[in-house]
Structure formats: structure tokens, C-alpha cells
Amino acid sequence: MTEIQIKETIFKLLKNIAPDSSPEALGQEDDVRETLGIDSYDFLNFMIGLNEEFGVEIPETDYGKLITLNDMTQYILAHAQS
Image (cartoon, one colour):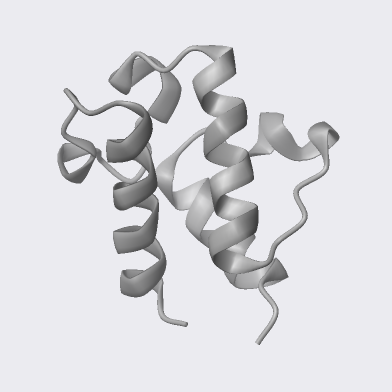
């Protein structure tokens, strides 16, 4: 899976949990939760969505590492099952 495909899937998942947002407008280093106004419950649902889409088990201890779009993309690239 390429970075572009990962980002497109992330955008889709973010749009599902924050339908009034524009995830495509996120910069690589923007704080996703803060920029899109995502609360902790929606963020948890987003993490579950990442797991389902990419087959990546994200331990709760790693949630704090997934702040920006770049963080998420690199994490998935490093942990995704091929």
C-alpha cells in the first residue's frame, strides 16, 4: 500500500467520524484531533477503523504517537501487514 492510498483511507475514515470536516485540507504536521475537532470517543472509533482497514493493531499506549497525518501514515507503513 502506498502513502497516497493510506492517506485517502485516513481521509475517508476521518470524514465518517467528522462529516462536517474537511480532512483533505489537513497539513502533514497539523494536529488531526485539534484541527478537526475530534473528541476522544470519535478518536477511539477512528483507531478501530484504522485497525479494520489496515489490519494494524494499535495499542492504546501508541495513541499519543498518532497526532499528525504524517504520524499516522508512517505508523501504518511501518506496521501494516502486507
